[in-house]
Image (cartoon, rainbow, N blue to C red):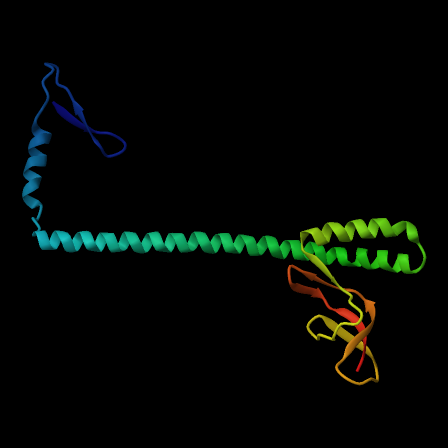
Length: 175
């Protein structure tokens, strides 16, 4: 029997014309066993422990990578949603301005848009009478008064998206 090497570098057995297999390849494998170093049980256990540690480390790294990728994806989606909502704020401002000018036919449209955005996490910052918070409000006018600064008029509404201030409210304060 002859051995041919195929394109993959693997030996293919070729049966001779008389149909008998050649045992030459088997003898080559058997003679190669002499080259294998026999390890003691302690060395085998140490090698096994090394492989186990490597496997556990790679498994932990992969789990961390998967968590980080999922978190990054969630953060990207949240930032994209916040950017879209921020682009919608001028539309809400235009509806408020039109309603203040007497165009009552835009009120239902503005209310519907605001309700849809509030359902997804938008909150309007326009509370007259609450205390001034520089994180949520921008004071552009001040009336003299006693006590802590209190909002007396909202000049432009501010908005929060999922507890993050997108735009501070422009307010007039007293105190």
